[in-house]
Image (cartoon, rainbow, N blue to C red; front, side):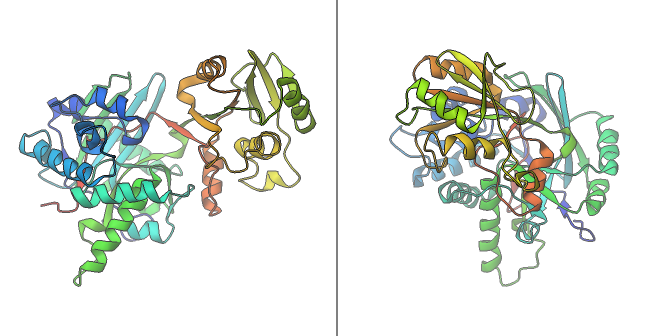
Length: 416
């Protein structure tokens, strides 16, 4: 493992599917599917990794995903996958290059282990406050399986040496190469030892969690418990490390995270528009999806409007206050619609940008929402600035695509 620089990574002896089973085992992340969607993919007896990350698909409907039975079922399924050869142990420690292609967008990353101490000393930086229930769930699953089943999606400021190392590996034959049912291509190369990458990350001062804050927090919690229980602790044991996929920041694709609100806070449509005009500039016949920062599309009563969001005095100097999601909250959602805390108010719902403006139209036209807001995507430099300042992004500010597949590479706390 690297130790001379800021970010430490290491190669690991992964559990992984045989190449011919990779497409069958690989599954969407556990947190982008509801139970019905997960069950549709994880049919009884098939090889979907959702049998491990969403074990409730194999349990009666009245058993919760965080029940003791769910973690026991995950253990059982994980053991069965290994016994049946759906997951096999790599013979040597490796780093992996992971390329994803979604239409015209391509991103090239590496799958490695990152050290929990780097998380503790803020070399691995966060931008999101974790929820105890979700963090507990991930920690319990890691502890039950003694494994990290899905990589934490992380980013770093571009490093030319790493780009060159990745390109060199991609010139060779891949270990996995398949197109998932959603049309996204996943290609993985194996780098025994991984030395060029371990050395290159010594030049990276910090990395940032893009997606997977609860997975990372759960992994650190388990690592701390293992550390406390081991009187011979050295810092090199497998429990000190968690699974991560790291991509350069200039390659990431961020889509907007849009908002729907179920009521107008007691206002009529005309009354709402009048109040709105007191806070922001409103123009009818807007384009739907905004074309630049500082603009928000609003769908109300069958019409798209465009809102121009003015920044408060001094907000441009505050990385958090300058975000479109923050301005919308401060100018519209809180003072007019009465949504003071979007994390708790049941009237607001968040819609990932992958669904597009058409989903907002569908929700309002069906009566499920009274009004919907389409935002311009948060920029990656804004996210990094918030994390560097030690702040937390507003809830549901970024939607990253494409999503990583779980089950292709697993890091276990007992690597033997």
